[in-house]
Image (cartoon, rainbow, N blue to C red):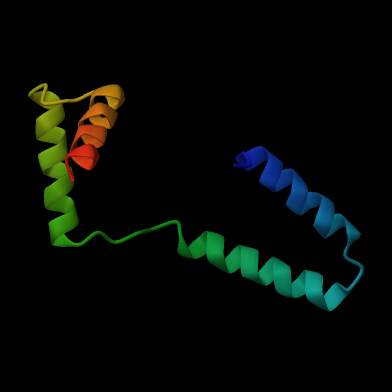
Length: 80
């Protein structure tokens, strides 16, 4: 899986090779509009509730390590 830097650098290389001005203008509009739309995300009431519940779990120490979660998932999959 490519890292973000590899993807970004690949895109930059491709953009630098584009000579079509109309294409570059359209690409600029696409990038500008997608980045401005993603700045603010409205959460539903349910999503906010789930985040609040997660915060409470963290405060109360109800945590599990990634390794323990992986082990639990493997046990569950093997039981099927």
